[in-house]
Length: 263
Length: 308
Image (cartoon, rainbow over all chains, first blue to last red; front, side, top):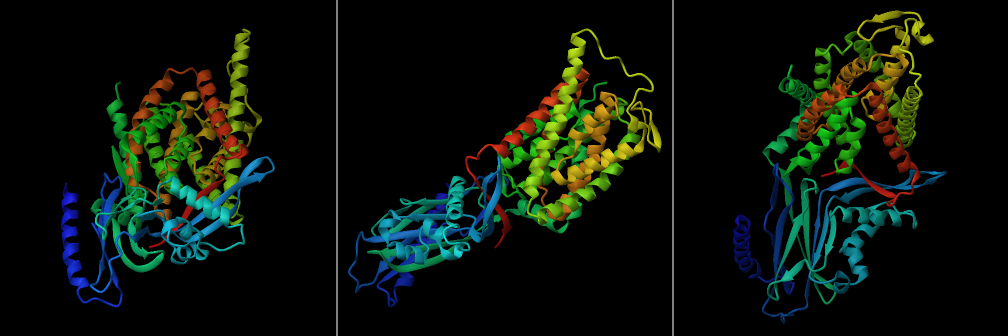
């Protein structure tokens, strides 16, 4: 209930903001405004993932003929970058070994693409690849990993497949809903296995396959007090932390012995 | 009920982890082994990063071996003198193992070394024990029970120089083969990330003819010392110990180990050896099948580094 009311307040704030922003009227005919329901998501000890909403509106100025119904929105959420290695097992004699590998130095830990309709219909493949819109375009980008003619292709596909299995890479082509012809909303679920860090949110507006405007924002996924402190202590006081864990183990071992002692 | 692990950065089911660690604790209590070779793959299967799984499960081993060692000590089933010799030899062996670990990683063949060592150690140790047990059972079945151990009936290596008497183990042996065994266990333990109980227990049983009860107690003492050191090293070197996960594993394991230790008292020596042999063989065959059977998904993903 809390969350819904927070969202309602933010939407209200958004509308007020729109009035202020759109008044001067820039060079562009359409103006894209977007906001997130949360700019900070907190991981507590009972954390099982979190949801947030992306809201936005498309404002056209007085001179522009409204293009009702032809707006398309693609929202891309990129989690913190990680260096990943994909290894491939292949037969070596009669045993299977990790032999070939491919490194992905800057892959996002989480990647969610939400659109108002299938992205293949929204814009051309060339533009998608240039703007890195859609999972295939992100994973297939030349700078995603080092190019080795065609040999890198199976590794790119494997990364996409494995990340999709873990729900960390996903593409939802009905994920953006237009509430009115110019007001849209997307509900995003961040699974609990997505790591803490900074998440970038890119909202792209297309009209008739052309990119009209982009809006960038971000939110932060952080650990709450206890989780953060444990991490800090483990890093900065590692010897004491290790000894404490070991002594805790000895204590419980002794305690169980006392509790179970019958003779 | 889910709980978020602050270092592993993922949620796990509390009941699942407690149940798993209770089962592993039970097995470790029965056989006097640490159970790391069972717990580590289970945690990795749940999605815990391998480094954190290896490091954190040593906390469970510390806890379950503490409770087993105390129980054994009170029942006079712990040979402290033999234990200390094993711990000292094992410490030197671990240093050699860590060095070899780094060398194999430089050569790019660490995975292979680990899997092949697992397969060969488990199948050889398990196979030898099974053969011995079946031979015992067979000779008893034919009515020609193997005669009990006689004085002076011992293997030649026990008579090497530097002999030492271990009263509780009914052992009077040169310490050279004992230190050699400890070196090997420390070496294999550091290389494979296991305590080495599964090698130590059969070795003490078969090579040194130490009584079963004393084997289990002494092995638990050695495991306690080596996993305590491993836990602190993992915490300082890799910051890979998750205290919340450790606590869950500890609680499950200590109770499981208590029940296991009690169950072991009602177990006949032959049955004990037979079950341990089957367990080791099963794990060995499982690892071998991983190596031989064509994998369904040949690709795997490893996160090597976190960036902001």
